[in-house]
Image 1 (cartoon, one colour):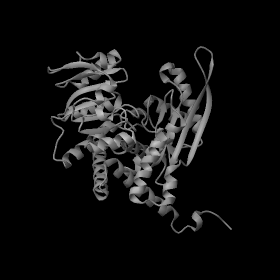
Image 2 (tube, one colour):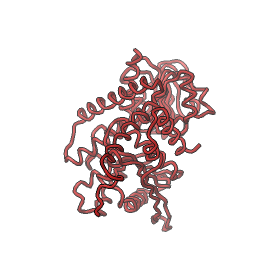
Image 3 (spheres, helix red, strand yellow):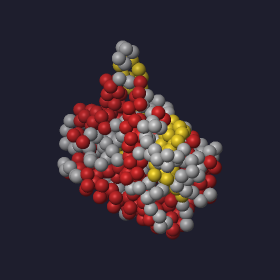
Image 4 (cartoon, helix red, strand yellow):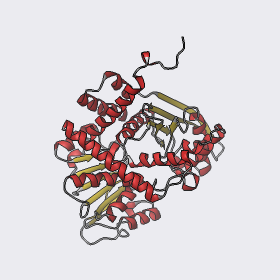
Length: 431
């Protein structure tokens, strides 16, 4: 089953549970706009390369579309449509006034020089410029994109739309000196930890002393490791795309991250990470899923836990910082065997929430302190968990289904408000 089909399955499961109207069900099952673009760049060796890109605007009932842009050699339209749908749901779960979108460029940025990467970014921005804008569709970083790339997008958009006074608000995740927000780099991880703490508080537990394994030691993963360790959790394993390390009695994740930056892979850092004794070994991305631990954090890519390996998972709680790391079928198996899953659309929503704060700061021409951003994020994520938890109890369902039900309720309200009192849905027609 494709990622897009998985998304539709999750939406329809929630729609069936809450008896969503057929009109709204149809609205959320298909994107509003799908754009496929082709452009070319001049490689440093003199060759011309054609590049394909996508931008999908899934739904704008609750506000401008919002969603990242990923540069990846295997990105395709189906994946982008799925991720755009998730963004619609995610923004509604945390109740920020955005709809969902996503973008992708089919290229491996690791094979490009900086000049070539800038060409790709600017050409793609020109291609999608007619449909993005501060109050239409606001891109952000995603897989293999970063603040520098967001700066280029903002600058190129300004070249195309020179009269746009608020052009910096066309994109979030920018550098701090170019309109970015303090607290954005760690927002996804921080938001996930807030939700995890809220869940543990409900069950009468705390983070201190809990053993944690983290698949994916990129931006979200290493910040999560740092924050969890600061709160007293014991980080026993981390992996990246090249492998990883396991230390039975825990290790210092910041030493491990410094080593990864130096050596290029966390799997080479078993000794440098330090340890308190006990078993130590190198492990793979697959191995980490089967470790004995209290909490497993998934911060890598989609479809990591599937029907093929789900029975090996031993963690009591699984937190999805990545998008779609567990297939719907595997999720059902985990829930049936008593594993609690904190779903992506709730757990990783800190990123889009602080992106919203950046957007607000740009439109207001303000600069908020890191403390103010953190305070707002904590309040938002705790409220989101409480809202989802109430729906979970109401329908006697799991956190994923409850999150989708909450989001669909809010989208349905926006749909009804938009169409109430308007003959046949038309509001600006003349006789």
